[in-house]
Image 1 (cartoon, helix red, strand yellow):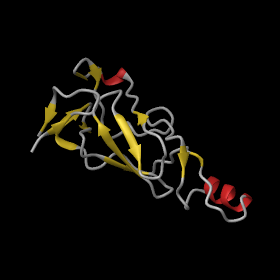
Image 2 (cartoon, rainbow, N blue to C red):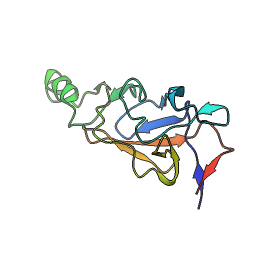
Image 3 (cartoon, one colour):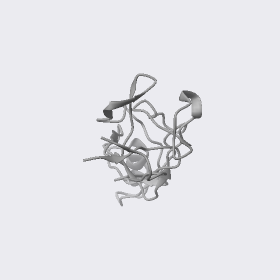
Image 4 (cartoon, rainbow, N blue to C red):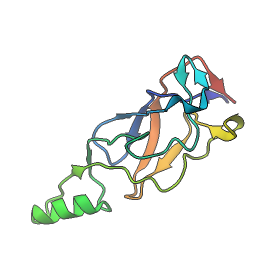
Length: 130
């Protein structure tokens, strides 16, 4: 089964974030899909590639813990700043960009605050990967 290659502008969602985010891929690898820069598993840098998801509700996030304590125990979301601990997984080993597996819609990222980041909508639908 094939899935769409992920490019700059793909919509992302964290299961603890309240808002979607848009993936940013810099055109440094000079590979495009649907006229947009194509991503690799190493396009996982917070802020640079993965913008915040609005507010975070993860009880593992120190900012949420502090906000909840300040609200006398009422669960209180705090600003989201993703803390990415590893590359996108699993990547597509059959398609590489700059010797790295390409991103496809099945890839996931794990945030240090227990969140799972997934691609909800690729920015292009014409290029697929096996």
